[in-house]
Structures are given as C-alpha cells and as structure tokens.
Image (cartoon, rainbow, N blue to C red):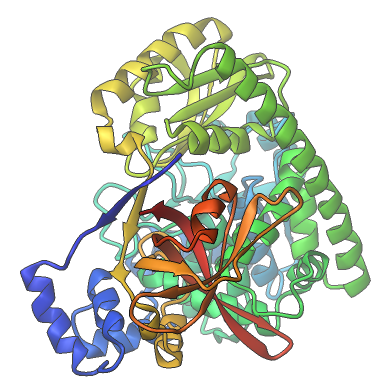
Length: 573
C-alpha cells in the first residue's frame, strides 16, 4: 500500500527556535530542525538530549504509593515473609520479573518468581495461582506488567492474608484493586513526569526507591538497565524523557556487559560482532524472549534471564530460539489462513473500517502477531480471536493515531475481561457475543476514525541533498539514538535523483533493488536499498528521475563503517 508523504514545515515560532539553535550547529542545517521537531528549544536541552544522564532520572517517590510499596517490602523482608514476584508472559513482563527478582535476591533469600502460562493460567493473576501461592506460605506478591484490573482476585488474596504490590502501566479502571500499593504512572491524579513507563520501567523505579530507602548503592541496579532497554523497545513505549535515558544506558550495557541470559540470546542472534540497536531488540532479541511465552512458558524466559551459568544460559537460549522458529512457522500459517478468510469476505474492497476475525483452532500465543500483520496489510484496526478455556480470547492492534482501547471499551458489557493501551488490547468474551461485538466495534471505529488514519502516512522530517549527508551530520544523527515513538528515526526526502548506472535487482526472486544514486545538486553517489519494489526498476534503470523517502543507516562491522540509505518508498516522476 502506497503511503501519503507528509512534510510539515516549522511554524513561525519553531523557526525562531531553530534560528537560535542553528548558531550552535552551523554547517549541519538539518540538525537544528530535527531538534526543534522534538520539542528542544535551547542548546542546554540539546546537550541533555545528546548526552542522556542517569542523574536526570526522576525521584521514584514522586510516583503515588511508592512510599507504601517500599514500607511493605521492607516489612516483609524484616519479618522473613515469603515474597512472590509475578508477571505477564510477554517481553515486558518477563524482563520486569527478572529485574526485580535478580535485584532483590542480592539482599533476600525467601523470594521466588512465577509466570502464568498463556493457555492454562491466562492473562494476569488467577485465584488458582493465589491458592498455589498460599499453599507455599507466600505473604506478599509483587505483580508486574499486569494486575491493575484484578480487583476480585486481590480481594480474594486479602481474605487469605496475602498482600499485593501492583507495578503496572496499563490503563486502570475507575475501581482499583485493594492492593497495599499500586505503582502505575497512568493512575488518575498522578503527576509522575513520565506517564508512559514500560512495566519493567515501573519495576525499576520500585527497586530504585527500595535502594534509596535502604541506603544501597546504584551500581547493582544500573547493571540491570539492559533489561529495561529490552522492555522499552519490545513494548514500543514512547522513547522520550526518562524512558530514553534508561534505554540509552541499557543499550550501552547490552553492547558492553549484558547479563548472562541476554548475552546468550545475542550470541544466538549473531549480533556479537556489531553494535546492537533498538531495531535489533525489536526484531531479533525481543521475539525470542516473547516466543517462550507464546509457544510454551514465559517462566523459561525468566529462567534464562536470571541464569548465572554460561553453559546453562546458552542451552536455554538455544531452546528459546527453537520456540521462535516454531512461532514463525505458525505465524505464517495462521496469517495465510486469516488472509484467505478475509479475501473470501471481500475485505480488500469492503467499506468496513475494522476487522474482527475468529477461528477457534488458532494458537492463542500467535494471534497478537497475526492482528499486527492484518493491521499492517489492510491498515484497519484489527481484532483476532481464538478459543481458550471456554471463551473467545484475542488481541487487537491499531493504526497510527487511533485509540483501539477506547474502541474495545465501547463494548465492555459484552466482554469477560480486557486490558491494554492505545495500540494493543487483550480481550475475552463468550462465543455467542462475537457477532454483537463485531458490530459494536465496527460502529465505534467508523464513527471515530479519521479518513487519514485509514491510509499509511510517511512523515518527512527534512528535505536533503546528498551533499548535506556529511560525516559531521552523520555524527550528530548518531546522537539522536535511541529511536522509538516520540523520537522516531528521522525520515528524509531527496527529490530528482537518478540511477548512477549501477543499480541492480537483488534477492532470491529479484524482488529488491540495490541502489546507487546521484541527485541533481552534485555528483556524490549514495548507496541504498529498497525492498519489494522490483516494479520500479525499469523506470530507475532508464535513467529517468524519481524521488526517494528514506532513513540513513550506519552499518558497522569489524571496525569498518559504511552509510546506506534505507529507502522506504519511491515516487516516480
């Protein structure tokens, strides 16, 4: 699907700010424009942005209930109570559990962890798990990346003398669970400066507060930022403010001295010989950690992430890699089946603004990925459902700018359970409610989605000539890392480029084009790659001009560095 290219010039107010910044970044004009687009208005702010410091992390006690959480944990440790660290089975949940468990086991031995299984336990906390924990003598749960809607379950736990500290980042309901402390920056009335922490990020802030209250140093805690960086990348939370600081230092840890489990995954992925980026986490490290919870048990991912033995960690990483291979095969199979059903329904030409699809035989661990695939292909908010434990259970995904949480919430009276955030929601309902839910979901989407949200958009940050892609500019561009929502990798446009005469088709089926281009302003040759665009090759090969929209990638391998344009789309002229 071809995207609409958007370029929004700086406003008059932004132009004034840009002029002020340009004095400090003379010779690299795009830098000041990119900074202003990110809300940076002074050289001082720019320097903080370019050099994120752990000193700028917020005081964890600014989060509501943090003092209560620390007091309850200190009391549990002082009384030698059994503590259970519990979390969701995805990347965010398993990294959160690994982080809290790894940190606390340095100071306390009567502690264990548990990750529910997707098929048997389901999402969140269950009464069966509480009964199991009660039988083990657990008196305190630290629950991470879930729990904000577990009102009945936590009331039941209280009746058994078990307390809960909730560390979550999902949207809460009006009625909150009766936990001794709820750490969630999205709570109504919260003034915590970073409302979009990952679940692991909330766990990190809890441990930071615990360290402060007990006069502990920060070295051990900072050594766990690699886990936070993985969670931030995989959960696609905004890469701004405190998140960006933790991701920046977590990536440095990943590239220098990652924990044993992550080191094994890095080896399995073949990433040991180059700098690891956020993209590597999203596309290589994260999916392997996730595959454990999707295909088998998320606890195996935590077992890996808390491992202290090199051989044990590598053995576990190989097993998780096998899960990932199985996941990819199932992913393709179910996506193909879903597309066949939608094609039979005429979805590609349908005027419907949303997709809801149900197949009771699909693997529960894969449907979230399939929902993402369908959303990407049809560019519509999508819900994919399967059958599990007597209910239709599924995941929804959204297009840029549309709040799918509100769309699901609009039919909450039909649901048994739901939870999530703007772009991803999990839900369950009775089979007989699927037709009514489908209609209600479609009605909400149709009434609230804007026409432009149903078409892919490519936002251009700046127009460049090849002569402006200098080593100095690349050096500054490198400092905009790490990238993510709110700090997206800059997208550039160069108009009137032509083939240098050496561009060629590549790929198993000649479906990609390896580009060697020049623009109309200079004779500088830029290398690039564009995927799945073979239909443009005759135009390019003929020497006729065209425009490209791209990001600039820096490839480092064995000490050597090269620049390549990653071309997102081509507009023929």
